[in-house]
Length: 43
Image (cartoon, rainbow, N blue to C red; front, side):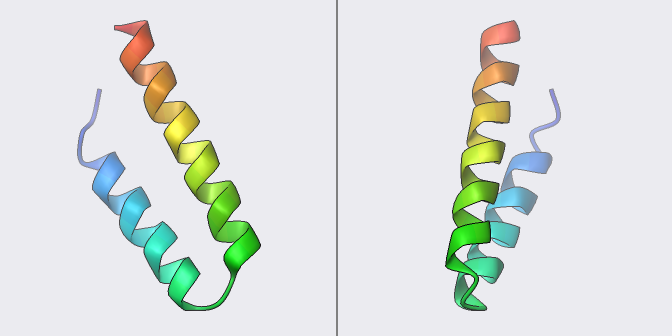
């Protein structure tokens, strides 16, 4: 598991949200959080 991926995705989501792309950022956050949960449960 690469922990450096998580902050990068959070920063990308915040940048997308600040740019005004509310719907895509929600999808990105949902996708990344689901992937993080899958990584945690697979260990």
